[in-house]
Amino acid sequence: MKHLQLGFLAASLCLNVAVLVPICIGLYRDAERMKVVFGRETPARGILKAVYSAILLVSTGLLCIIFIEETSEAAKWMATALLLVQIVYKLLTPFTTRGGKPERLPANPVVLSNLGIAAFHSVTLMVIFFG
Image (cartoon, rainbow, N blue to C red; front, side, top):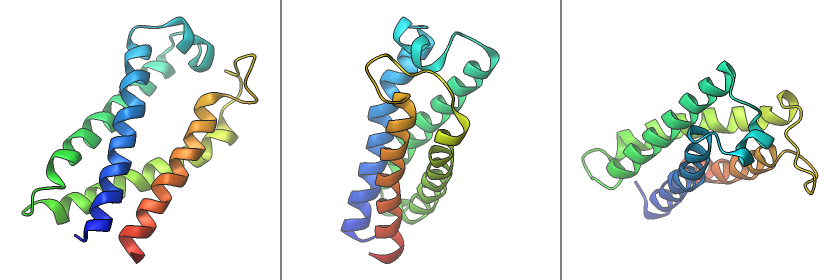
């Protein structure tokens, strides 16, 4: 894997970890701030915690193996699949999410951040495929 590809891939996976650690902590603690954005604890929110936790764990695992020469090529393709799924679901959130808008924000902050993260992951995939 080329250095530029590896750098972008690592950055996308680090972004996942950096975003998901505080979100997962807030969701598992049932923090009041999370209730405004994600709603009260429901079965659907429990499923979301599981999905976010899975993305966090897989991203962390991939970060560990993308730098090992023997596993970097396979890890690149596993990470590509993860990022592609994330891009799709993140681009769908504006169409599937209603409510959860704090008073001082123009929209739900999860929807807004999802769009930014999807853009970043899209650049990463472009570098992997065309860079």
